[in-house]
Amino acid sequence: MRKPNDITLKEGIGKLLNVYKLRGKFDETSVVALWPDLMGKAIANRTTQIYVSQKKLFVRIESSVIKNELLMVKSGIIQKINERAGSEVITEIVFL
Image (tube, rainbow, N blue to C red; front, side, top):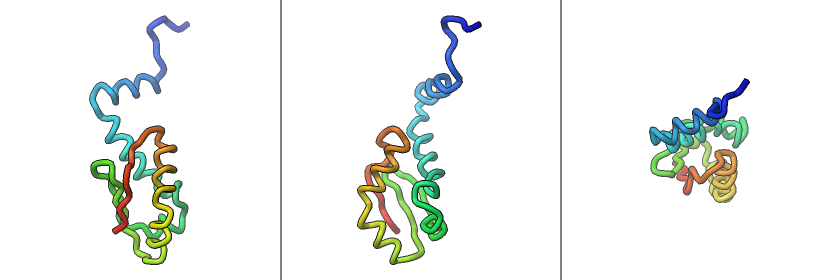
């Protein structure tokens, strides 16, 4: 039987992240982990380095052809990432 002050595990972890101000770093880490799922296997295999710094996603791509294709759809990628994260985690993408 639930007590009135019981909360779910998801709510508890969310409160913990907010109290200790870890939400931003957690969201950034989840973006890096979700990159292969969001972009697909072909792009993920050619991605050599990916990291987030100050709401900018830095991605190093081996193939210049894929890099140019991604530059054309940069705003769509940002929107897709932020939708998946549930908040505005990324404001810009830099392809290296």
